[in-house]
Length: 287
Ligand code: NAP
Image (cartoon, rainbow, N blue to C red; front, side):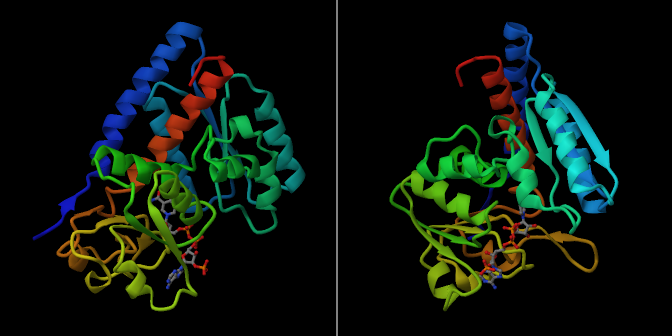
């Protein structure tokens, strides 16, 4: 039987409507309009699209939004100065530096320069540490979006075998921690994992974030499993596809996210949620 399709676009739309309502309520009660600043350095076309989408999503949610465009030859000192200015800007509650940065800039130093209370990507080491101990203000947007999809679909995590394929700092590792905090039994796989299929076949919930088109095939999953595909890969014909081979996996899984229209729309949604959280904290409101 074909798997149930988890409609990330629909869930993102409903969540954004709710965020917009809560943002309007905050503004009405306190005069604080949530605000997000995005810094983009250089002119990478994919990054430009992501930044445009973030700005539009902010505006649609009734939030203040500013994009700071800096040339590709921006120096580290110039970028740090810009962050310094945004740190002091009371209209800005969230600061995001679009990654990747041009090679001559040091990403770690840049991330560490964003104050943790305005770090709506949750990449600052202080926020990363909080995720580890399960006491957090902000969650990294993509893993948080995955958790929201599971919650919306009423998928029980407690006691389930959860397998995360990929261990990046922005997706795989925090995803594993969030599933662990929700009482899943979590295994993390990576490029050195031996017999990956044997591990993925154990998963009741499989989250894949590796950046390899159609890599996970139907024979690698357990019948009835929930399969969450974080991957976003551009094929030669410019079509977008995930890390999961949808055609074969959707015949075996119980529920599955498509690409596009699965995890992708949730990532910006959770960025809006984090911006609202930052604004509430700035306004002195309880979360
Ligand atoms: P990344 O930093 O490149 O990390 C990839 C991870 O996958 C690494 O841990 C790597 O293992 C592992 N891996 C690579 N090949 C593997 C293999 N053959 N078997 C098992 N593990 C393998 O990537 P990322 O930033 O986490 O992104 C992953 C994917 O998600 C990409 O397609 C990206 O575009 C997408 N993404 C989507 C969203 C969204 O909003 N939907 C957001 C972020 C990322 P090692 O650690 O051993 O090298």
